Amino acid sequence: MRKTGFTGTLIGTKENDKQLDLKHERCKSFSLSYNPEKPILYSYAKITIGDRTIITDKAMWDTGATITVISHATANQFDATPNEVGTSISATDRSDSDIYLATIELPGGIVFHNAEVWDVDLSDHGAEVVIGMDIISRGKLVVETVYGVPMFTFSIEQ
Image 1 (cartoon, one colour):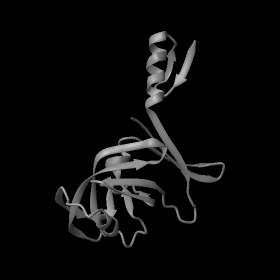
Image 2 (cartoon, rainbow, N blue to C red):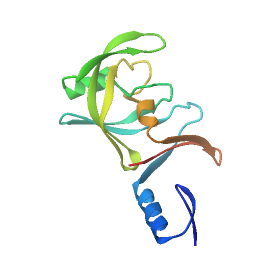
Image 3 (tube, rainbow, N blue to C red):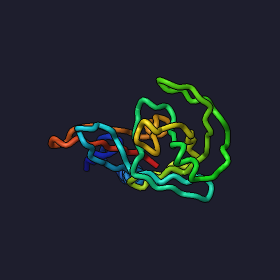
């Protein structure tokens, strides 16, 4: 018996079948379409810092961002003490930013615990959260056109 799966093609043995089944159970993903007129990748995100949780549909996925950030307005809703302060650098600005440890929940049951989120000015971006490469690089992000519809898919083994 041959099986094709997440890790490639395997010649079926009971042990290989068990390993493949376990990998599939741990694989989580979601796919969303986006507007080709405004090619910005947005998704839902649930951010928890301390005992407060904020839910937004304005989580922008940005492969040019090395860190995950939240807007000043979003950070103020948590009323939390930052874990540390760092220097954030953008194309136009350099500033001190509060850094919090958060739980980030994304579509498809994808959860990141103890993720650093930086408090920065996002007023020009129309986003409440920017998902950066510190999160994206833990999984696989695919941007493609499917039957003429622009889509993005994020998958991860958790």
